[in-house]
Image (cartoon, rainbow, N blue to C red; front, side, top):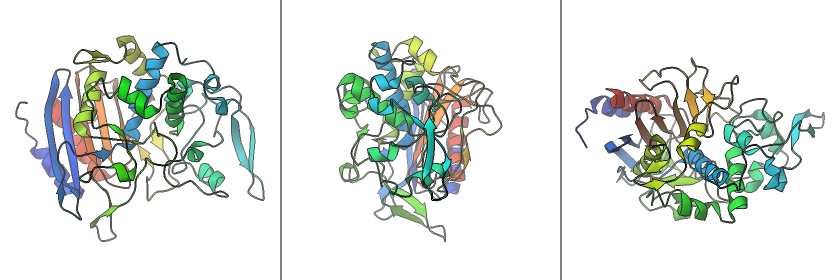
Length: 381
């Protein structure tokens, strides 16, 4: 790796008041920068190394989307057939229209079936309880299941499939479709077909008790600004959350990014075809706009808009910026994030990408985003 001036990144991380972070830059040929900063756990003083295991949360979605598209290539899943063909639970979706005076939810039949394309583009009609107040209200009588339970993704639709973009549990359903079509658990499918061939040995679904002892802890800030480790953990419960349950390392995820830059291939391993990557990175939702998330739980994730001054699109797994990004990324670059302030992007035009991982709640932290921006600027310097 060539020497890269990371002084601006060091300054941004120092100013962010985060416990620790890992930053990695890649191009199509390899890793150009990799470094850990600070602490994985402020209580124990465990250092944050560049290979420290973290919860990648919604960065899982891109990996699950690749798995689903492998099965599309194999003819075991279809982008546009009713997903109920493999997931009968979604055969008769209901749209939430409101609540009666006694609080009972009111629904109607959806206007059209849900498809895999709807799931991968977050246009199926699902939402997230931490984003959408009506979903939180729908769960209220029975309680929102703590952690990762299948009951937590069983909800009415907020709109008819295809009508809107709403960030959602849809990729969890896509992961269940991968299981149904392959006959394997999502853990085993990914190990055999995605993470294994890519050499991502540290990437898997881990319940809290399965995390390595030196894994990074999620931190929150006290009212005085002190960083405090917390027990937040996503994976657990009764299914593998393809939408948010993976833990990984920044170098592992950087290999995934390099595969995307390589048109579906890394180090001789073909994961998907170049045509599939082209389809996944094409805006699927025009004229809709993607990227804005409201909030029903601001302590977990306040309102967020990834690139508020652009009419951002969505492919089959990624947010797309149609114009040059504020830190240099090309039009048509793709990115997304994990809720504990981890972020990645890849730029197919310039052939570069990067991964920034931290473990901090709530999401969309201004300091973490500033550090991610500094990392981007390093790639284009």
